[in-house]
Length: 285
Image (cartoon, rainbow, N blue to C red; front, side):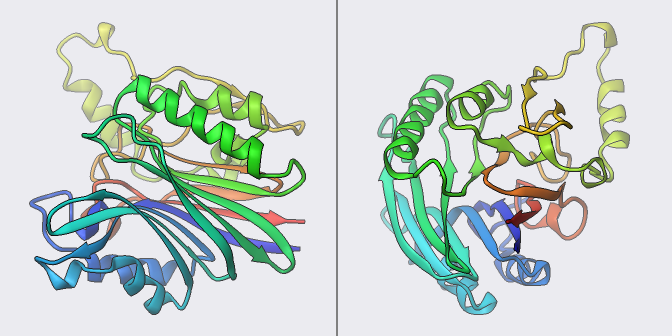
């Protein structure tokens, strides 16, 4: 049995959400303190010719945390590029970055790596989907095809990242077609705590002049866990980090038991990126 600490985090290219202050050094220290086994990172700068402190972020994190790393470059600019990265305490056996860009203004990719967890191959896919619903649907269709083609049904899989799916409309595709389950939907109740949410949300609701017409931007979807404790659950609120409201980030799994899942809120996380990171502990039989 192996227990993995898994973090998914959109690091916003190493800049804070407020004023664009460089936060990469503090972010690196914060991630080190989590002692992760797997890091699924989005908006990672592989190249920055203007600010050397923000250059090769995946390599800097891998060196500091003593982890293997794979980087998938998606968006290329004149002086910078950025994409997704996977950092692993376990050997990365192979990896490939698949271009799933829907149009030239948004470069997106699926970073698919296979790691060796004590002799068991585990498929890890880092995603950052597009801002438009039609594009996200096509990107998820490409993801489904990739998994059905390259991932055997009996091998564990983790998919994590920024799905930009604030209405949670893509969840049935993962549950019904791939037998994947979002970790918050199947985590023990004790792992669902997200401190500091209710107070800010109550104040936000009170700011609306007509409370009767206020609606949350999501619908509840039943995600079946494959166990007797399946329940109605929504992914957590992760954006913006200082005041989490939208449900953008996900961790899906197959082949694991979920020990806990939580959003990392408050200091220092709300000052490091525009997203709050997700942390889950998974047990691999």
